[in-house]
Image (tube, rainbow, N blue to C red; front, side):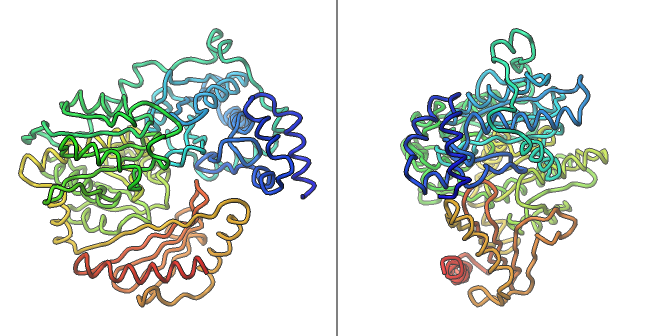
Length: 565
């Protein structure tokens, strides 16, 4: 075993006493060089998405020491950039294992550094901490979550004073502060209860949560149009943070016929009925689909653990439930928001829709139909939030009317700067009922969009690469895609290769490759920023679905050969 790794392991054996769960795990590693290497071969990386990793002992794991050091680094950053009277940080957390523990440790570190820590009394979604950061005029915000990852993961998202996830420059500066710190010696802390008594830690007032819900309710675009809200809805929070805010918002706006999936109702970081609590995948939606069939629901909604993503299913003409992709839901919402604002006379002078470069390009055609401009940004909702902030600085925050990414994240207002499944669930229900009142299903509406703009098939395939060896393999594969001079995928000629690592269209440099194919198609390849995965996104335009699927299959076969060797 590498002597450096062995030394790290021995230090942890001696000093990792703050969490009783760590010592047994460390002892179980003894003699297993592969386990020790995986736990210690690198420090858990801090970037624009903060931290995310498997819960456990080691430098490449999420644990109390990693959280305390990150919080100390963030504290140092805040002290360097904000005067004493503006030093405060908002904290939220979801249902994941140790989320509440990590949130309280962060509060203890902030308070010990003279930074007021505002923390929610109970788990709250991602958009709530973005909202609280702005409303309470905090210097930063954190959300303890691993979003939609499996239960063994947790994470630590960091927000700037604008309520948007940290920019690359700020994240690098925080990382620099973290790297200066000894993991066991340099993090200041005071006891949580002591901080509460002293006022250096405070619960976030209920008024902030209520104000957030009111902002979501203002996102309605139905106007004076007739709408029958008596539809049967099945909802699953997937054992996460969405239960209270989603139900409260829907019920206060007149959607009362709601059945909650009982097994997935209460917070539970083990996610016993959905090992991958991600509404993007069928397994996470399966129990909700069973409930929808049992209760003859019109609409199924499911939000992920930190309630920033939402997936849906609707009935087809045969009465079977069909899941919609993030792109399909986003296209429908884009068209609904644009059409209703046009009809209501509430469209701003320079309306803007913002999407990521891996999100379906059909959005541009939909937006253009209504005279709306589309802005493309890098993958990650932080870049959408950043664009909203730029509009706000120009006095044009109202120009933003909708933004989304293909991974089931949506936002229709500028009141927060991250994707918001509470807002999305509310808008989806309104859109569904608006069309249903007029005898139109969402699948009918989708077909109408395809007839107007042409059929577009968008698919995502992820390839898992675990541990140190997997990390190295991903780097090799990305280099191969970049340098191999690929001329075609599935017989479709590559017309242009966009290497976003070189900086394109003024966007920050990012390890993303986009191959533009003949016939308005594309292939995007990128490593995930939050999971040990390589992600590939395939877009095919064709006269109809059947033709698109034939082309897509050939492209995917070529991709798999290149990735799997």
